[in-house]
Length: 480
Image 1: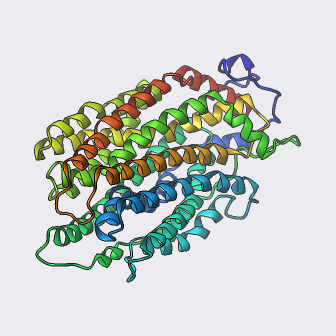
Image 2: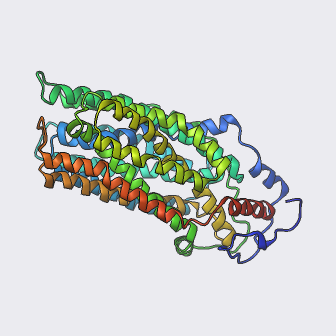
Image 3: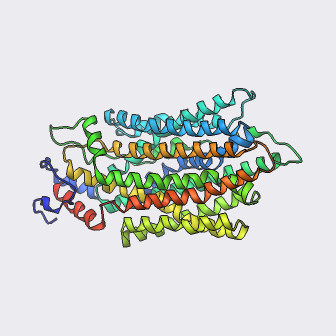
């Protein structure tokens, strides 16, 4: 990198550059490679916390809320979760397309999307947790507001996640900013689980096998991102270090085909698709499992908090680990860690084991959150070297990654809730029949293990090792 022209031989074996891009000035290069300040990293990270507050609440508690508080039947609850997730998945590439067509403004191309959707997002989220006075059309009510919520959260999440590529062109700085972001997001998840968990536990305990009654509408008192817009303003304004410098451009359709043919992107997305489905199955069924299969009804909210506290503490550990041993190794170690402990909880469902499993599971939750978002920018860099004229389409990578994982999660959530319906789940019952208990054990134990093993086998095909990543970094710096 000492001023010599870039040698195409330093590219990874699976990249094939087509032509040399227009040179970038020294001032542009210095600016894009400059270190991010601590303030910039914190401002970027804080913007993702409110989203995770809501995602935590819906992920852990929406299923049991629909079944035992809103009291719609298991089939209708499965349709709400399935259709809502699939709808959210479909909106991801649509939003990604419109983002690539958006014009740059004084606050960038991504920020207007995040700021504009926030007020409507708050309203839709509020009514998602509101129990309407009528009972006949509650299914339509929750389906409509869940789909609206998924649409609006996509309008925020896709541009926010794509913002990582514009913070810096230095891989180390992007990884550091991603670690800050994941720490804040897990803290947001912790806040959401703490507040909503206590509310759900209170409502569910008093109403479920009760001596007194409590209005389920109190769940709507959950804070709905009041400070969301304030946090968004703190995200630093950034310019596009990858703005096209040549007259030759690639259309969205051509860029989409190129992205879908890029091997590292396909292997990374497929691997974490299965891993995300496994984590989602555990997350969505964990409260039901504790309530009906493990006799831990009085402890589930504290167990959830233990998982999230462990995840917050372990994110810096995984950030150090991936820098020391590489991202692919960190992914294997972090994801496989949960396998024995998940099975242990199924076969030994007592309080002590539950808390041990919670601490251990937090390590895997942290790894599953940090690693894919840390590896995805490396895939974008690798793609950039293979296709130097295909610029300005970063949203494709992020929107379709979220699309595939959401779609698979939607199917898994719908099928899992449908399995409870077929097993004979009794809405509002104090105890569930043995087939329901057995089904919950399968959804917490055997099914996630199978998905995780499949994902790890696919991850073996991921070609961007540390050597390839460093080689790509040198070539990109020389090109700039």
